[in-house]
Length: 333
Image 1 (spheres, rainbow, N blue to C red):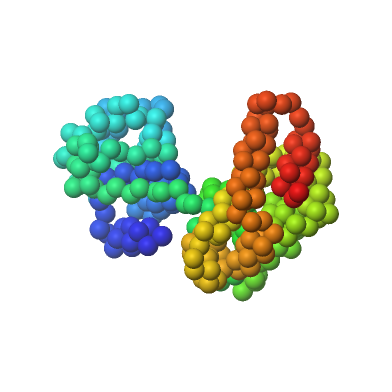
Image 2: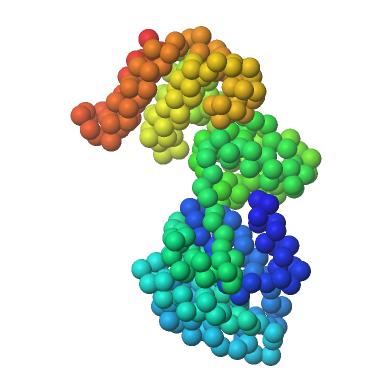
């Protein structure tokens, strides 16, 4: 996030590069930088003649270069934004000659999502020399909760760890989706609100009692009744609770538990750091560690892999409910 702030700060100061090549697996920050340039570099009177948005699937690299070499009309500069520029990946190296000598009055922004330039190639080196390259890396699941907390803190909100975890487990690591849901919450809730699981349930539609977070907790505690109630709810609401997600999250939990068993330093902060969880949840691992010895955890990981294959129709043809029930029985017994 610091790199994003620095880019925005430099643009506001007027220290603008002729090329912004925005690439990588996480589209959220690519869009943020691109949108900021689109909305703020030119004033409204200048945009009509001097701001152009292209799409990679509709243009060639030659088209982009031709537009970039034009001079602005009645303005100091023009802005050309190429969205979905990854569609030009086969021919992107043709941008080299322009990157080596870009037009000083043009700001060329290329949104190169889900891909990245080879750092060994001349194009990468040329853009790094004359322009700006930003690589937006995909966040790991254990980093997203902290990102949510920082985003909300900057807007004068707080969030409880369970509520944050519910968002991550329901929406995954897609920052754009999470940001949209946070925006909805901030429209409804007053500043200084501490967002909890009830706010998430009431406003986003994620059940605070029947979700993968609660299933994981019930399994860790060996609470057979609660775990069965949750999987029955999942079976009745398969669209909102895909089996593949449940298996994946349980697999992550037991993989972390396996790492927990192997730790020499089992102080709370060390465990949180080593297995990549919020300290708030560490007690759950101590309890699960007592309920599931290392050998049993290794067996459960194998059981989860078997359930994953069955969920994909390999080796058996079972309903989601039957797969979940069998999985739960084998894990808990």
